[in-house]
Length: 268
Image (cartoon, rainbow, N blue to C red; front, side, top):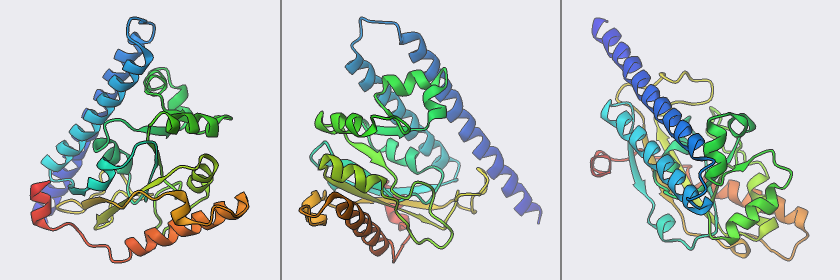
């Protein structure tokens, strides 16, 4: 009983330290790039690369700190993602609170959609704007995304729109499919497995199983739109068919969810 209480206290403490360090780091980056906003000797393109690199390194440091404290384990099998032709939509399932952090930790330059609360914040707004991210409530969201993809950027989307429910059945919304069809974008699927399930919707930030969950990220092959659906169909049917295709693909890929082996985790 005493050991269990001590273990839980350590878990809460180490989780608090991890999240605090992450928050402080994000604040410092926000302050720095807020001060950099009026600086014109650095081009917007270079600022964008710098900020995305900082975000990538911050997320990578965060998951390493969490692994050091024994809060999570992880392994990555992402060769096809790293070698894929740029200018695609990267989609992923969404089992946990830290999925976007994991994906940013393994992608140095990636475009994301951000909530209006982040976009409008005095500090975080300066960061996400200069990072070239896209507000998810923008009226011109499709033209903005099309321009990013045409420039060779990759855009992250979670087709579920929120974290996976308790039954582990994925239910995709049409946002990712609508965008892929509208701009004729290729799709890079990344599967996120988390065993045992942790940091689910409704869980507290410190509600982590003993030993930490094992996260496995693996990428599939880059899929052209016409490899997924009949692109001669009317647009509304393409949206529906692609949403169903992707939902079926993910439910099949994740139907035999297996945690990463200890050997994989040690080598990650």
